[in-house]
Amino acid sequence: MDSDQPERARFAAVAASSRTLSEAVEADSSFADVLAGAEPLPSPSHQLGLMRAAFQRGGAPELRREKRRRLLAVAARDLSGELSLEAATAALAGLADACLQVALEDAGAQDEVAVIGMGKLGGEELNYFSDIDVMFVADDPGAATSAAGQVLKTLAEFSPEGQVYWVDANLRPEGRSGALVRSLDGYLEYYRRWAKPWEHQALIKARACAGASPLGERFVEETRPFVFPEDISGERVASIRRMKQRVEEHARGSSRRGPDDGGDVKLGPGGIRDIEFSVQLLQLVHGAGDPSVRSPTTLEAIVALVDGGYLAEEDGAGLSVAYRWLRAVEHRLQLWQERRTHQLPGDEAGRARVARAMGFKDSPIA
Image (cartoon, rainbow, N blue to C red; front, side, top):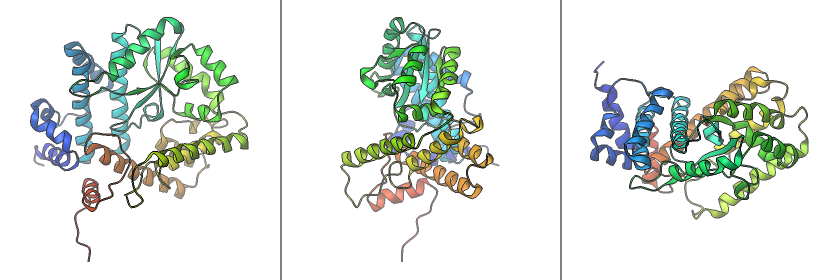
């Protein structure tokens, strides 16, 4: 095999699928360098070292630049077919973990504060361009609040390269009006007495992703009984369904797109959210009696549900295929201009571009 073939395939895939990353490759040789070579993506410890070195060189602007280079490395291998969806999304989550760790170290709180990844960050199924959802835990919340705020500021700081990440901490108890940092006991008391069913459901995705690992792991372990109670009531399921419906109605109401546009791969009927919601409901029902189905990662959870006999093998296979397909489309929508979107283009040229990025050839319609 031609030793340059993988490199050429990566360049071609990026050129066809991302206008802005292609421009970055043309403008900066260090971006082109990450497309070359046969070495695998960096290990978590190596990646953390790269991000630390970048921050030491130039603070948040250089961290943002290095993060974009690392994102390009994942995208090129994803688009050229070298990475599975699972490998790509896990690599993106690992990149976010490393950036959170660097920001926490800069705040001097890496041994006192645990960062809990939620949503797709927690499930290690992160998108290329999305917020990262987190919560902060510390034994001394008052002392840790300033450090947590500094983490948010460091990662959200604008530079010519944009932001490192927009970090969303609003899944915490009481949302924006709640304390930014709580103790483990404070979280447990809230989840015991006041949390709504959807807040318990959100904890399915909780993962200790940066900072004080022992404290983070305790958080995950000790919140499990709230997520997977021995008896899940019909009212709890109905409440979760109502919340999902409100989210979707809000998204539709805030969209400016017309009825002839291409549709939403995340919130549209049969979309990503529907699959994730269905899987999570099955996890909620069966997770108390069978810990094997508690994975925060959707595709892993589907496999476990099939293995446990809670989901028919044919249905599990169908859900997995559909989920991989929709997430791949979502990634290609986002990579074109490096922005968060879930909307298919409404014009023929835009749809053809997405189809080519998915590997389809142009063909005339008779």
